[in-house]
Length: 601
Image (cartoon, rainbow, N blue to C red; front, side, top):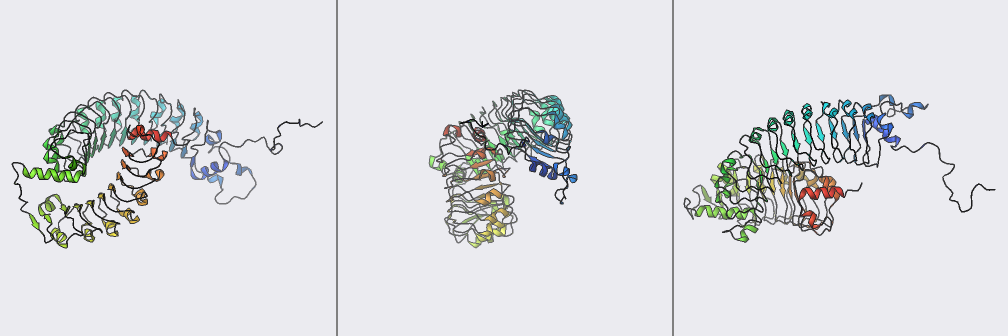
């Protein structure tokens, strides 16, 4: 009688199987890891870490047990200790105490798993420099974590931590710590002992106050306390002399923080609070401020002393209660972007407001001349009239280092404009609102000092390579032209921080922008771009503002959510269906979080 029953399902692989199961980690990966010291097991659906990983540097490799001749690449006795282990985006619920068998680890990344605890053996990884435990289910950490004296970077965001113990102060070499999106109601005063800390994020917690000890962090450059319940900021915070970026959005503040000693502060984000007034005396110490964001508050007016913000480039006052503007706003020499939507402004025609910052500042300058201490109709005595009927204000060239030849509707810049500048140092050039079809070639004469160039509202169909020689450029405004592409040579502008390309004719996102790693602002609205490469955008680690509104984006890549440096992402006015408008309207943080949740496992 046959041993196979009629109708029974026959295993076609029967007889070919061995008792040996396929390894959860391919042997080739382990072999490569012995040579390189790095092992990437991210996104493999692991529910536990195989023992072969923990014992990687202990067990004799398979090839050593065979009688074979070894090539130079296969000499197992020359293996390297594992220094980098990536276990992110798996389904790990437990981490074995056997982690102690990898004492040479410098980098351990276990983010995006299901861990509710970390083994005490983590404390035996004494060489560890970077530990990433974000996006797990941790409610507490073992005390052994605080014994990792070589730790430089600690990421704990998106967990369920309710308390941070005082022993965190033992991590004296720590340079970056992210505690955002947890359940913290307070942080210990001992946090101030982290004298090497450069970046600290406490965003999306339940903090009602900050400890005074935080002020002793003399190297801290970025402090993010967005989305908490702070009602005031301790005055002692002003002693943080190295602080460059301070994020206090979505709190309960009623006044600007007092920061008299924060001379290095470049960005102050105070949106979505309850601030009613901008006190003149507080502006005196903010001369280095480049970005001031006060949107969605209750500010009723601005003092004339706003002109003390001599370095300000972006002033965001959207959705406040401002009815009038001080004329002194037009005296801010670096102001590029002034946003005022959602204010009950009176006395300024709507068409002026809708034409943008330059037109509004021009209007305010005119108003300033008409005020009692001005002399209406008389130009400055230092201005000279050129044959082209243009005006070059020599006073501005010499004192403000600014060359303004805007709004002339000329097809080129007369040579006498550049001749008049002579050997003066010029840092800012405004050639906007003309009829230029080519970049003025004599701009190259200013290449050693020019940091700010405005060629907006012209008819430029392309950019000449001369522009790529202006290697001191920090800000470049090319809005409202006829551009369809950017030259790859633009990559030479290694100091460029912001570029404005809105209202052009781009049909694809310029490849060169992905390579300009110094960029923190890209304004690209009102073009015809159908897509962006989110993976390449992620390489722009300083990018904080990206405006892609009013383009032809049919879909938003979920990987865009991994661009965690973004603080402002504008996508409205595109034809995509997902994410829905309601999600986009919640703001950048919610949008990025939604996109991350859509990334395929």
